[in-house]
Amino acid sequence: MSDGGLFDTNVVTLTRFVMEEGRRAKGTGELTNLLNALCTAVKAISTAVRKAGIAHLYGIAGSTNVTGDQVKKLDVLSNDLVINMLKSSFSSCVLVSEEDEKAIIIEPDKRGKYIVCFDPLDGSSNIDCLVSIGSIFAIYKKVTDDEPSEKDALQPGRNLVAAGYSLYGSATMMVLSTGQGVNCFMLDPAIGEFILVDKDVKIKKRGNIYSLNEGYAMYFDPAVTEYLQKKKFPKDGSAPYGARYVGSMVSDVHRTLMYGGIFLYPANTKSPTGKLRLLYEGNPMAYIIEQAGGMATTGTENILDIQPVSIHQRSAVALGSTEDVKEFIAICQKHAKARK
Image (cartoon, rainbow, N blue to C red; front, top):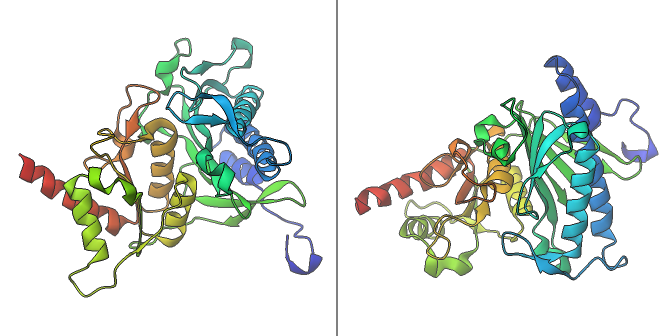
């Protein structure tokens, strides 16, 4: 909506945008149906997040999800919303959620050709203190003619058809890529639609912010410690980097996308393979950052090149501005050589 109470009579909604992209690609419209279903779920989650206290949606639901986090009521609600909306879109055949130990195989009469991996409410440990939270999703196409199974989701990030995240903050935003760059859509509550606000977003080549949980510093690999020292105490006369860490991946990655810099959740002695989940955290965020012109790595390999072996597989993550990530990789390679 434009200022002064005037209406934009040619507004670009997310649905319109995806339909136009699909038409250019001569698609079937199935991906549009799927993304529309996700949008409906996100709108409902956004409403639930904003009235959580009134509706008594805060608090522990009495169980723990498969990755060890205590499940909040909003997590349960969000998971149910996404699953039900995707099932009713007739566009997916396999769903992988952070909240469910096994993949969900869609009933034969509701199946489509896509596989969706998602974290329905990322950063939910921050719900009670009103910190921004979000939803993350990754969409693959089924590549075999076999009966749908969990194995269909075990594809490297390079196979992604689309990925994105929604952020429930001062406003609700959806950030989406279908392989043709990154676009940002803001939810306009007046008309209940996501409106295109930032087209073809590009990340800075170098930023001046680093983002990670330094509370784990005693467990860091020496390469991570050296990189941080270089950012805090630069020897070339440049200004030190600022530190920003929310603890909600969607918030931290979105800030990195907007302002540049680097987001790190490295492996450490407590979590030697990393903490973040590859299929529904690492891959979609790496895809978005690469589509925006940045880089995403574990420190030793590109995140999107990893061949997953399990649906809840964990991975180290370092992503952001190209020059910042290359600098981190160079330090990791130096330490790897020294160990040989």
